[in-house]
Structure formats: structure tokens, C-alpha cells
Image 1 (cartoon, rainbow, N blue to C red):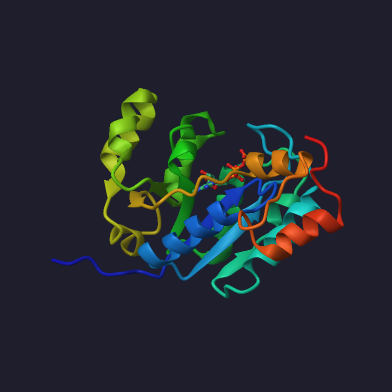
Image 2 (tube, rainbow, N blue to C red):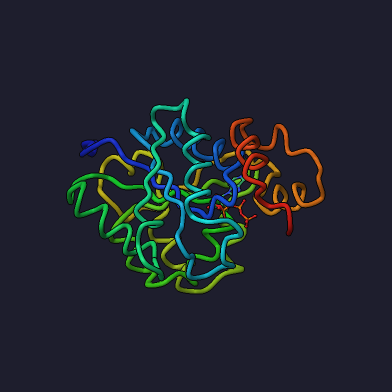
Length: 223
Ligand code: ATP
């Protein structure tokens, strides 16, 4: 018997967004389409617990996300992490969203394959599966299955038990891992920061209003 859909999933894309760029935006746009999401919430990190402190303030990073997503009504800026006092973990964000949106609402935590292979380093990472699905963008022609052996036994075993097709995302509120073939643009925030510091062009790596914002506010002029 076919399983019934319980709701249209909401996507969550967390990141430092230091700055946001077309790699993030294409990942979100492809996932919106392939995972049939109703909305994607872009959630800039405040003080990320497991990576370097962002180079520019949360206010600047949020403002750049707002400019970047202005013409896509399905993309929404969610500033809850930048408002919260540090440290701030994804598990806490998902607990809040679950309380606000209800127990039945399917939630999808979106990430690139590189981020997924490090998931076991996140705070209370195994609780994430009880709160959201995890949707991983991976390069076409490659699969996570080929890379999963390079990670921990615990992450491998969750992957093997939970890997599902995109249909699962609307049939249960949380708990599936779905892999989507998404071409990765070779763009990173690191690349953009170093290009600005070297006074090189960043045009076409990110939306023009974000590039203009960076120049107007003299962001990233030192690496
Ligand atoms: P940095 O260069 O500072 O490490 P970044 O460009 O990787 O930053 P993040 O804010 O760390 O950006 O990324 C947020 C999410 O977006 C992560 O899940 C990451 O895997 C994904 N992502 C980043 N860049 C790309 C890209 N070019 N294509 C697809 N996904 C990406």
C-alpha cells in the first residue's frame, strides 16, 4: 500500500554565509525542486561551535543573505541563530522549529556532501534524526555510499538504515537520509574572501547586490 503524504516539507539551510554565494543558492534552488519543498529557511550561524569564527558580523552576513534571496519567494531568512547568545547548536534550532511548526511537519536539514561526512562531529548529532530528515546534495556520478566508508561506524550505520528516496520526505516528519544528485559549483566563501582581499573580481560568483554590499561596507579587505 502506498504511504500517504503528511505535509509538504520545509527545508533548512544553515551556514556561516560569510558571504552567501551562488554555490549556496544553486544548492537551495535544486533542493527546492528535487525534494518538493514548500520553503527553504536560510539560517546564518551566530558563533559556530565547530569552525572558525566568521570574518564579518552576523548582521552583515544576514543582510547579505536577505539581498541574495530577495527575488525567490520560497527562500526566507531566519535570524534565530544570530539573535541567540553563543554557543548555538543545530539541535537547539531544530528543537525550536519543531515546537513552532508542530510534530507532524516534515523538516529537512539541507547540506552538501562534505558537511554530511562530518556530521558525527556535530553536537548531539544523533538527536538530529529524531527532529528532521537530512537531505544531502552530492555530485552527479558520485554517491555518498562510495565515501561513507571513510567516516565513522556510527554515521555509516545511520546512513545504511535511513537512506531513502525523496518520497519519504513528505511521508514522515523526520528520520530519513536522502541523497540528491546536484552539480556542485566550485565556489566557496573562502574563495570570495581571498579574491576581495587580493582586489580581484568576484562578479558572477555571487549576486550583484551582495557584491555591491561587500564593496560598500569594505568587507573582506583583509584575509
Ligand atoms: P567557507 O568557504 O567559509 O568554509 P562555504 O562556502 O563552504 O564557506 P558554508 O556557509 O560553510 O559555506 O556552507 C553552508 C552549506 O552550504 C554547507 O552545507 C555546504 O556543504 C554547502 N555549500 C557551500 N558551498 C557549496 C557549493 N559550492 N555547492 C554546494 N553546496 C555548498
